[in-house]
Length: 98
Image 1: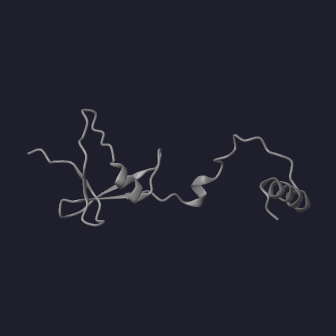
Image 2: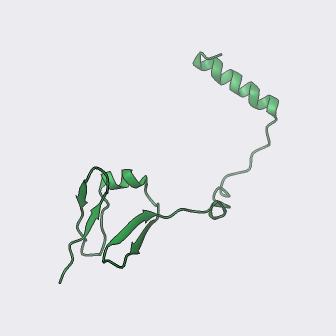
Image 3: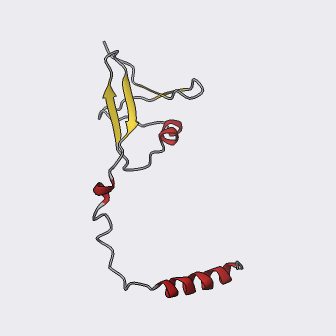
């Protein structure tokens, strides 16, 4: 028996349906992506439940998993507080702010 793949949101009794491709891929409908607040390259977790349903949620990364993420950027010379404040003043002036 072939199961019908469904992705559903428990928001305002809305149901979204998606089809499994020949490669086993499923496109998550935009409403569901927005509801889960997921973007390209985010991880999705599928948790099988005992009643035959599957819970779909986002994978939460720990802060330590982000370590080294920006290593590819060239280190810049440290900026003093006074230099930062000066740059902020100049940019605010350009925008017409005080």
